Image (cartoon, rainbow, N blue to C red; front, top):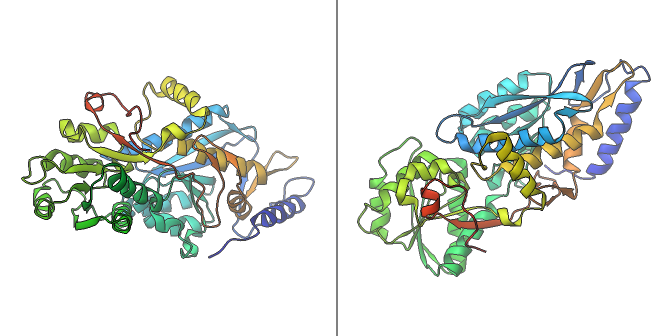
Length: 409
């Protein structure tokens, strides 16, 4: 599926909407995906879907917090109306994403969505979202295939401000091979769309650099005894074990690895799925010394410092995961697109045509966000893929979060 001449499409759609709304504003405009009609005095409803409960809740809550700071920055208003945020917990699973998507699609008041949090949620729910005419912007999905040029039409309503793991896996490989000087690696994933794809990208890129991937092992979601899998990794004797998984299982891996003979000196590396204080708590002292890749916060725009001050004031804590600023940017891209296409008649009714809104998001160019200057490509990538690697120290295992400075680049 290919999207071209987006700017022209948006302009044509807006002209058509204006022509159809009429001077009285009581006739809904025409749009192939339908129109959200908001009576005078009613709020504008925006959906959020992502994991907000369980071991991986920090991922979704962190994004939602970023969205809420963005809403506050707009005075809680859009087009002069109160913003209503509707939430659905996607549970970080395909099944949870499917159920959340069904509930969102059934709510005809929703204008657009922020989410999902986990790539698995999007895999489970995006067909329903797209077919309902909705558009969603994820702040934390990183699976490469979600914005692959070969993606099918079910992804037409999907965008992200997060990076693709095509960049993250490559960055981790370069860090291990060039910075740490390690030449052999093992990987471990949990079967999720995120983890399986990310370790595969790392393995491919590490091999291209001249490294050797000695073993690619797997565990299951919900598994607590990691020693059998870790024993197989130890038998391969890699210099580094890369396990880009999530909080609960990642905590067990880190905590148990040092007790496995042969892994005492193996370097442990995770990625943004583990970039939270919850993971450090789950792993305990064993997390000290290991590395985590994530967005490079030090490369964010000047407004990020102000965002952090507002976040602290609102939530009485620093951000708890890696994608809060991406959530802020996702909301503001959606906000700007809604402003661009909305039509309000003289009777106070506001119409938001869904295809015109989707086209307006695709047309986003040079948007000044916290995470960078963002432009949305024809397959939904809007983010600035700038990756860093951080090291967990006694400071973080002692309760302070997040890590202060990257160790690479």
